[in-house]
Image (tube, rainbow, N blue to C red; front, side, top):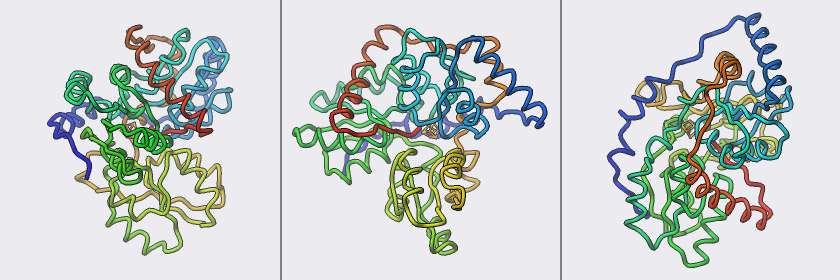
Length: 359
Ligand code: SF4
């Protein structure tokens, strides 16, 4: 069994709820207002030579706008890579804060804007740099591997950054070298990595508030209702959910699996923002949201990240009109965070892997 750090801070859902109380929901917009807003955004993107990069978990309208305007839709690392390679002077990142930070680390010369700087992530919140540095100092013999869903400061303290699609390969590689791993912050993904690879993994105790609410019992009930459906799950989900799933993988891998598998129906245990791409990729197939814990869940929006939901046409227009939501990172922190990020990219190239991560 992997070791687990007992962190008061990391497991305290009250702290997450405090952040959630600041995550205001976007105002509904009429179809006519939405069209006007989109036109304004397109002209502001052109005026500022900016590219819109959106995560799979954002609203479909933002994903469409990104693709229509020469921007990009993908997972966090693909977003950052696109930002680095594209010719725009400015990047507008529709996602959560660590995605904007990663984009800025990889493209320091570009202005990186976000619709809101309040959009965060429960994994990032539950891994503050002071506690994390203390944890690392207590285990100096371990290789420090952190998930992409962390602050720039936590990345700067790490030996490796990984996304969900390369986590297994990196853990296997380190294990073969006889190295022990200190893993943060997602305990479910870390535990999955430990089970599959057999690596010696010491876990930080944090979870994604969206994926943690998927329940195996509800999933079993749903499978009985849809006996021909395949269950697709993100590895941030609890072990009991992963054990009854037909496929476990990152967001991009889930989309690919849904195209590859012969099933016509899928029950999907990840943020429902991904349904836009799933349906686009397989228009004739049926996708069903996996059941969550219901009223007692921390996730107040049922399989949809409340921070991702803060990205809206309105907040995007406001950010482009008055570009004050720019990501700034201490140059020393950015320099140190670049090292584990580039290590992962180099490793992926050498392994000929497509590095495609989640949220
Ligand atoms: S879905 Fe979960 S992992 Fe992704 S940004 Fe939201 S809280 Fe973080």
